[in-house]
Length: 364
Image (cartoon, rainbow, N blue to C red; front, side, top):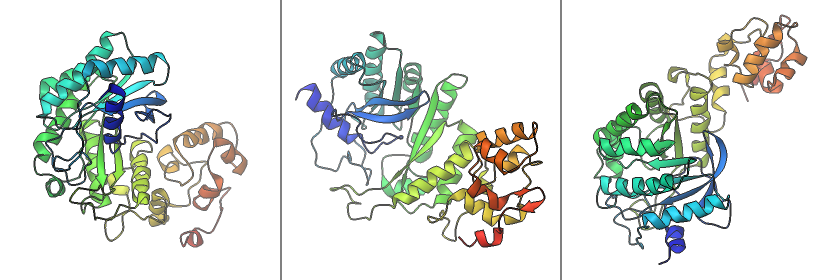
């Protein structure tokens, strides 16, 4: 099999590891659009090998599936990437692998590919996946070569992981490796990310957000990704219903509140089933649940008070504070700040008066 056909197949096997990669951006099946710390770009995204010892019940590459297996040659893979880079078709690479023979065997092939690319003068973006169970030395070398490294946690608790895979130890193979990776990149520009598979087990949104918040606080994870479960033919979960994509979307919205808005886990609002409300934006849900703190006066409110108002984000909150020092706050000035006035008005008091009936709004 030639390298193009080999990578085409391996790229298709990598599509379940999303990390914000969208649909293929060109006719090349191994080029995906994504968002990196440096902005939007196209990545060559592929596995180095889809051989895997793992028996993950949801995974396209599970050892128990009868599929065609392939290992890409490291040098040929590096050559392909350099050609794509020279043609300006990509602005980076995202390389991963199945657990081929063992974790360090797979890591060695990932590292070797990245080493060849770097030795050929490439200084741009590389994202390398850490295989659960990888040695500390391999993690260190991976961090030296990559701009971003990641290790997928998959589930928020060990009990859920054990329901899905028999060979991975949650605390040792995953959490310990996250800790090693976090220490390795501390003080550098490099970033560490993770991913949850949502809906493959019976985890709740509350458990997912509690675990992701813990990872942010303790291990300085740059961000968590959420991938809604979709059944794969030939796996034990092939007859399980796919997860509602709206659930994935709500988790991303809630994660944004924590990472970018500074919300704390204890401020989040979940339903009786400990899941997020699929019918309502999580920030609205939090505001309505805590309606006693509203309305607030944007003329006097602190940044932390403003950021709790639906329709006001970090940028508009800072602008409000800056603009109100120049002239008296009014609707025109709020609009000038970039705040979404229609959404924010029910929670604001301007010139001493309510802008809308908050009680009526809460029924939406």
